[in-house]
Length: 487
Image (tube, rainbow, N blue to C red; front, side, top):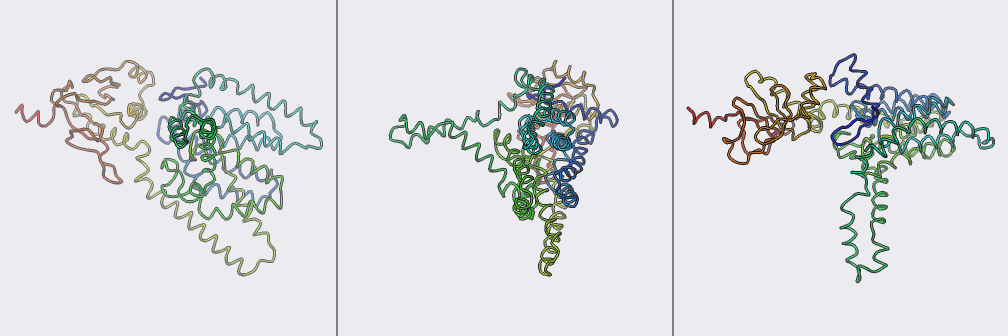
């Protein structure tokens, strides 16, 4: 299949098939899910080098660009997670490199694969490749290029017809339809409040100046510009801790002056390449702005342009023949502070982030399954709340439950205390909600129960490692009070 259902959404196929290939060798492990993204991250570094060489900015700039990308917090963080966006970025980079090398068929194939990997690349990748074509065409002999241009796009369109069909007619854009800015339910109340400031809210002037189209355009512009804000890039980063360290930009703070100088120097030295890189940088956030704020995953396509500009600024300085002693000293200080920034980020990432970042991923589910597995021999049944997500799927994955068994369990749920639950062996997954005293719940004896933290009763708890808050409350059925009464 070219489309997979995932929690009410339709997932693209490339990352799923890549993971399946890895698991043929490793089996279903947590690392196997992340490995395709990690491999893609390594290839992205290599492709960045090739891209800069093909843009004829020199091998020194190419090597520095690749090095800076390898050290970039944004790239490291996303590459180490199992993210489709990272694979899509690498495929897009590969498509550009192949097109610049005039290997048109392979480039079209990589372009198509990127569209089958992550939903925002369906919009961004064609725009980027169009900009690349504009860059490589010899406009003095443009007629000679039209034939190759036409063949390239015809092949690309043919290859992506299936994914376009699925997107339009088989629910492939369910997620986009639910989260794009044009379905924002807060817009209408905002418009109505603004019109109430007019003497006549129904006047033509009120309707022309305050309407949902104006607000959608304003939101789009705000979200688009947020991708270039210092807060997002250099200071605070993504507010979702899954995609970056809390309180750290997606890049290093010291990248800012390098990027600015790189833009200025490249404009004066190679305007044609400057236009191409700036076009890339300006096109990348367009899909992101259609669905909301700057976002570590959706905005990832901005890479590796900041690194190329930074590398060009550094190379331009190194190529100055008669450097002043003060200039050399300042550059040495700058590089020292840059390396300290890298070291500081790595320290925070490897020693601090695991303690608080794990609860933005699957840590609660992992803790619950581990707790239950250690005690499962004592109980006939174990019930685990799904308040943090599909714990049943997590359990099935870790315990190598056959997919057919899991699908059947999910299709034919059992009822416990009036609640439909997924049953796998002695494990039940669902959220119990007692309508009366716990003692009157319709639950089999000798059952271990792990419930959401706001549950009114608990004899034990699983605590978060970062701040000690309860993430699961735990009790047996019959409860200790019921056992005491029976005695």
